[in-house]
Length: 241
Image 1 (spheres, rainbow, N blue to C red):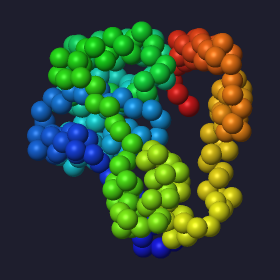
Image 2 (image 1 turned 180 degrees about the horizontal axis):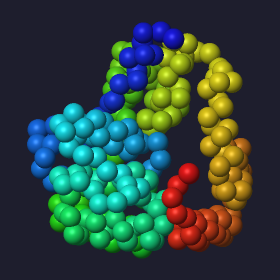
Image 3 (image 1 turned 90 degrees about the horizontal axis):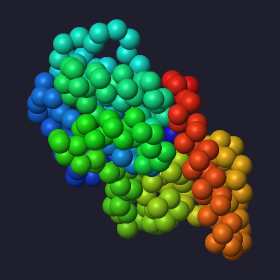
Image 4 (image 1 turned 90 degrees about the vertical axis):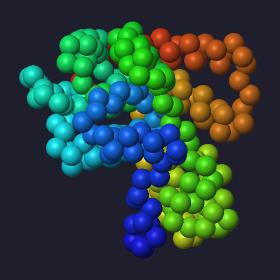
């Protein structure tokens, strides 16, 4: 693996995410409270990991959604994938936030949105609206790849990924050979993603990829069916695997 690809493993942040990290570094013992909202692959987990490192370096106890027992004084609560938590665990987290008043960073996807998650997000709203993470700009894609912003590699990978950080990471090996086809090892994670997708949604994606025009009523039915199924799963799901 080249030095350029190793360098690409660094964290690339926009101004708002950088401001959040700077605030934690400047005052790690202040009760920072913020909700992070973004689709999967936009860097929520990476930002939470970096925040965890900042707090641990400062000696602040870091607690996640599955901490058992009474957290130590002065702790900060970092919750990833909150949209996957069941109603019971979300209720426990809300009571913990209400009674102990810790610093909280809550990361979740826009959908599904179980009722307990909505309540928890609203509890944090007085500190400010949720921070929505955005895709990389073309310049940020180039920065992540460690190449010049006007290079063919940066333009090609940004066009292929739309700047979604997880997809940029997967295509990073192409930074040194942008004109070549995708090697099998790069395609494997995408295959795993498709296998995890609901059958109806997979069919919708395949139809879109092949250019098939779906009737509006069929498209609406598929999306509504997926919404109901996801809502049922979110209410039954406990600890994520």
